[in-house]
Length: 139
Image (cartoon, rainbow, N blue to C red):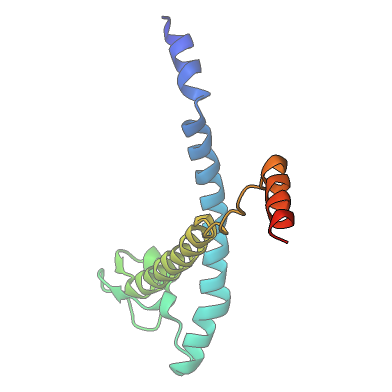
């Protein structure tokens, strides 16, 4: 089997295509969660904690002056950007929670409902006729 035919067989398998679709959807979903964290949740958290912007918290490692923005401090040398880490960690926690809830709902939908008890099969016509004859003879 040639290299190209092996590659073609590998590439068109269902698992590879499913994985590709999952990666693409995951990337888009990640952007949505980023927006939720950065545009909706972090401003509320910032307001609760008195106007803090976690993403701009850092410790200058190259003697940067206090009060610089994170971008300016990075231009001046290495920085320990722990605020950005807090934002990314919160982003991850929210993403993990959302995925957990989605998987839980998908699993709930996948569970088969208990089948209703099957109706007993219809009584054959000859048996019904014999019962009618029996009942008529009893009368």
